[in-house]
Length: 114
Length: 113
Image 1 (cartoon, helix red, strand yellow):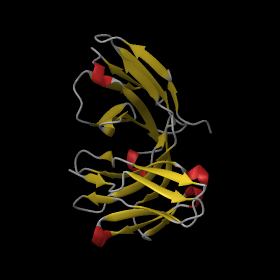
Image 2 (cartoon, one colour):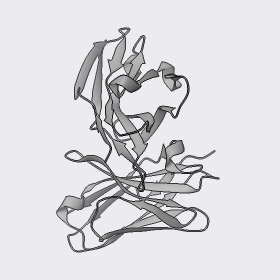
Image 3 (cartoon, rainbow over the protein chains, first blue to last red):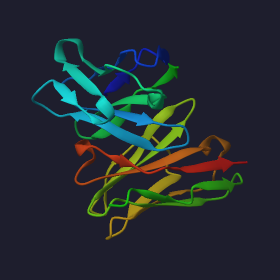
Image 4 (cartoon, each protein chain N blue to C red):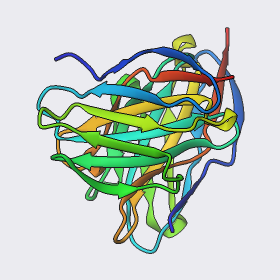
């Protein structure tokens, strides 16, 4: 079965600093990969997705993610963080052989200091 | 386009009761999935429906069930509620199968007392 690991439970950055959120997945083949963001009391918003092709994917709100097959990783990056980026971020994979489903990591909570 | 809507937004039930949650997907979307979110277990997949057929089901007891109507609207039902069923229940829709990328509703906050 597939699994997703987000090693960092909580990250704090200063406004204007760069950001990288880590995501590693476990699956025999290349799954579909996603990053979602959840603000307090809200549902999840899709930031970006990777299916195939170019391994650097651009998303909304200035985010990008890079798929690295050799490392089974799909890290999310942003060059300059804004205070409004404070939220919880979830990496997810869609895979499963005969029972495809979306599996989420435990999430990384991002705090942005002024 | 209007986003995914879920009703009700908040619900308080007593152990042993049953509950039905409703989800209206984005217009034109044919796939609807349901997830349970709790602080301890995180986001867990419940089931996915596509064109009124359940495609996949997560590891939840039979007390959790769902269905999808011809207009793609979906309902999920939890019978014989337990305290551990207290959670945020999220519905998500996608144009085709869930792997294309899903769009989530705001969720229904269920509290079981």
